[in-house]
Every structure is written in C-alpha cells, then in structure tokens.
Length: 211
Length: 328
Image 1 (cartoon, rainbow over the protein chains, first blue to last red):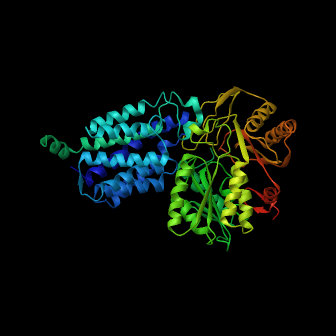
Image 2 (spheres, rainbow over the protein chains, first blue to last red):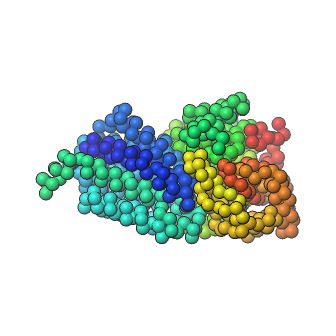
Image 3 (spheres, rainbow over the protein chains, first blue to last red):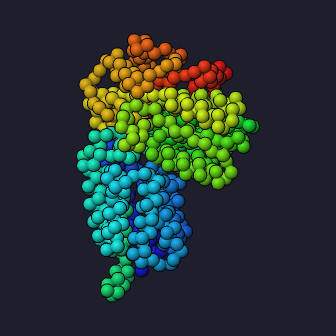
C-alpha cells in the first residue's frame, strides 16, 4: 500500500527532477513557447518541497491536495492551474484514507486528468500534457514501470503533432517537429512516481509477497 | 541586461515603480499595484494583469481614468489567482469588479479561478477577454486569437466609463464592444531575450523578419526577407483590413515592441497613415509609442479600433497613469 510518506517522496523526487531538468524543459519551450516552462515548475515544486518539509501532511490525499494548491498559488501561466488541478483533484479523489493501493491511485489520477482536460479543453493529440497523462493513467493499472514507459512514449509522440492548445498553437504548422514541453514535464512527473515506488523497498516487497 | 539576477527582476521593477509613483500603492511582496484612493465609492473596479515584460502594460495603466489595479506575473507568465483576488478586494466599493483578461490559456485559467474565489468572498466579478490579433488565423483550432494592442483601448475606454460611475454591466458591455471593434497585427525584427534564459528565444538572423508575432517572444506565422517600413505597413494594415471593414473612424495604435526607436515608429506611422488613406479608412485619433511591449524585441504592431461618438468621447476623457496621461 502507498502511504503519506510515499506521496511526500513522490513530490520530493519530482522537485529534484524538475531542478535537474529545468534547462531541458525551458529549451523545449523556446522554439514553440516562451522559454520559461522549467523555471516556472521549479518555482512551484520548490514551494511544494518546502511546505512538505515544514508541515508534512498526514494522508496521501492531503499531500496531493496541498501540493496542488501550492502550485496554483506559485506557478502562474497555464501550467500552474493545470498541474495544480491535476494534483488537487487527484488528492481529493483519494479522500482521507491513510493508505491507498496503486489501483486506487490510478483511479484517482484519472479523475485528476479528467479535471485537467475539462479545465484546459485539450483532447489527446492536441500536443499537450494530456498526451503523456492519458496513456500513463491507462497503464498505471498494470504497474508503475508501465505508466512511466507509456508517459514517455506519449511525450515523444507529440513531436510530429501540430499544436491545437496553448501558446504553441499560435505557430500553426511550425509547431510540428518539436516535442511538447508540457507533455515532457508530465512524463517527468510520472517517471518520478515510478522512481518513488522503486525507492519504496517495503512497498515492492509487499507487492511481491502479495503475488 | 540591466538587472541584478533573473529571479528578482519583477520585484526589483516593482520597488522602482513604487519609488517613482507615490500615487500608486505598490505591494511588492504580493505583486499588486493599486491606485491609492481605491476603493472609490460607487465606482466599478477595473482589474487587469498578465505576465511582466509588456510594460507599461498593465501596471503603468493604473490610475484615475483607467485601471484600478494591476497584477504583474513573472516575465511572460500570467499572475496567480491570489493576486487577482487581493486586487479585487482592494478596489471593490460594492459596485463590482471587471477583470480585463488577455486571451492566453494561462491568463484565462488564472483569472477564472480568481473570479470564483472573489465571488466566494462576496465580490461581484465580470470578465472580458481581449482577443484582437488577426495573425492567429485558424483561431477555432487553437487557443484563439491573442490579446495584444487592443488591451490599451479596452482599459482606457472601460476605465473612463467606470470613472464616470457607470454600472458594472455597462462597463463590461463597453469593454466587450471595444474588443470586438479592434484588430491588431505585429512584426518582429529581432527575437526577444528573457532574463531567465539570457539568450534569444528563437533564432532570427539579421536581414529577416517575422510577420504575425505575439508579445511573448514566440515566433510569428511567417518569416520573410527584410521589408521596408512601407511594405511592413501594407502587410500589417492589409492583414487587419482582410478581417474587418471599418465603417466608422478608427483609433490607431502604432506600438513599439520594446527596442524600436521612436524615430522609426513615427516613420512607420506615416506609412500606416498612407495605407489607411489609400484604403479609405477614416482616422479619429493616433497614438504612437511603446505601450504593449515584449521586453527587448525590435518591431511594431498596429491596432485599429472602430469608434462611435460615445467610445471616442470616453477615449478622449481625462486619464492620469504612469503610461498614459492627458486632460488632467
């Protein structure tokens, strides 16, 4: 089962990964955006990490709800409300259970992704974060590793697409040939979820012994 | 770049603005700029905001006759809902607040969230989207047309109406009317360098220009070999008149993107006026200068706004802000 410690680790791992990948995310955002995606997420996840250290939420739902609110209050742009809503709505869907299963997380994350789709109006194939998140949620029922692979594949597959949402959409045909920065950071978030589970020895052992 | 470190660019600018404009209450920590006499009894509050890097928009348009408050975000990044809620609370006299929102996904989402939160606090909120950029041609399949130069017309005219004590529904309707009657088109001669990145956001060689750019350093729709001022005026005005046929006189904004000298802007305005004359478009007023900028980008945009007697009267009404000032 996944407890609050696991979810806090997910946020901490994500914060470190965003720091590490900020330049790459910003570089992807240069040709088809405005070159600030890495910087903006860095600001948000630093705030999340600080808040988690200062006053660690006690349940998985509370970790994500609080993180989502912080992203909304610190990131700005489109990614603030979108990532904030993703985590907040996923957290709300988890309720106040002290522990949740991977299957329950997959279900809650689907609620979160649906909320993002509704807020941003993007559908799969629009060259957005949705292109990484939807396949990730579909695969999370199988395993964390499958979700990571599906998200990464989804992000890479945005390259030949023409953007229909967000700032890249203004470029029309010229958005083709660039990997979407939002899909890339969404894949990073899912990869960090898998990393958090890799680091969770007890969880892996429990899952293995449970068959 | 004339900065300390990229992380403090916005806060540093706000501190400097506070020092230069004692008539404005600048909250550096919470990033809200409010006219000092707010809330004005019985007056609708006008709140706008957006990413920084477009100065004087929006903070430079706070003052009597224009905005009640502005919320600057990080460079080219929309502000967060907390800022707009704080601004709305500071300017609401009970007559309600109008949010003027440029049509970018980030701004729309953050202002929507802010409107919900402000309404929870008992503030009546209306919103108007500014989407005047004709360079976004297939807007049905994108995030829609961008808000650019028309923002100045909307903020000035709606601001004058609010100053006169017109009710929220009327100020909102006017703002919407001004937007619907406005169209813009911009060109870039250089790319833009954001403080965070420190190098140009795209590669635009000398001797080439980008037609149909926005105000966030994103490339335009088309790259061409360098054109003369006259040819650029024909392309820009032509693109606008392909989209709208003004029946009334127009306000003309010839806007610099940040690093194009006024000498060139006035020369460009002469060409814009020539093309408008040739196309038979009557001109009511002309404004030339750097108003809706994109950091250090070289280039210009043209905005036309059809006016009737009433909107022209409100355009001419007194205004006193750091960026726009006449009649008082």
